[in-house]
Amino acid sequence: MKEKKLNQNPKIIVVCGPTATGKSDYAVALAKKIGGLNSADGRIDRTSRREVLGEIISADSRQVYKGLDIGSGKITKKEMRGVPHHLLDVVSPKKVFTVEQFQKLGKRAITDILKRGHTPIICGGTGFYIDALVYESNFPAVPPNKSLRTKLEKKSVEELFELVQQNDPERADTIDSKNKVRLIRALEIIDAIGKVPDVKKESPYHVEWIGLDFSDEILKERIHNRLLARIKKGMLKEAHNLHTQGLSWKRMRELGLEYRFMADHLTGKISKDEMITLLETAIWQYAKRQRTWFKRNKEIKWVK
Image 1: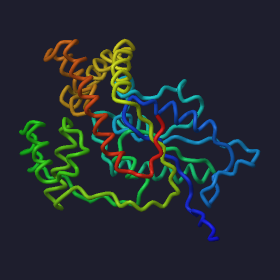
Image 2: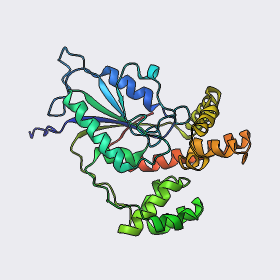
Image 3: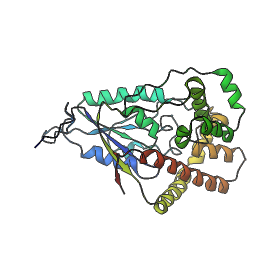
Image 4: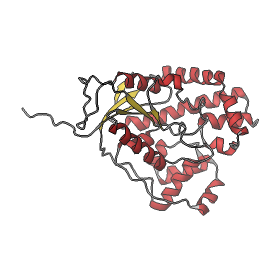
């Protein structure tokens, strides 16, 4: 009988899935359970008396920004329960943070965690960011095209999304159709090299994929309840404070989802009730796009 070949690559764990499925809490609980050294062959040595926790790398495209706490659902210090977290509060929301920058910092975090003998746990719902860390991929060094950006800035998000659909249908399936910054960047890359390149599905790690999801009915209810809880917690005040600290309404809208609709409400474009209704619909649409992305990955073991 042939022996199963042992994966010699270091082990990492990915906790992924749509928004509002409890990924952060799950990842913390998982990190608390991990004991023993992450050896070079990718196994967890549970016989070691030394307690070694997992360390969590956030893979969320908005939680990298400082001050985007309640609206992005950023985990609090208390909720971390002593588990180290990485790639939170990396940059000012006034600046654009790209997937290339995320990949560089995330890969560095994985290397550092493995050197400590700990297990990296990548946790989040931004599939493009997760793949950038897990797989061997080089993103195109496409410099900003100022003249093209000026031209595209004049278009609505609907027009921009239509252009992405026409020129790169695969990227259109997963991109945030209301995020003007990402749409323009996608079109910039398409203009330069033809399409947004696929991430190569070869990993230097032994990856354990865990996916969290619920039925449509339950997930919609969780999205609804979470949104109301965030509003009660002070999400609108957070957005107002960000603006008084110098974040423009234009930039806030570019940050997408909660921040886009809060900016519209706080500038008088929509009422609070309209904001809640529109935002709930947009979050549900986002959750469906996340599902589309993750369902392509047959390695994910789904927990419901």
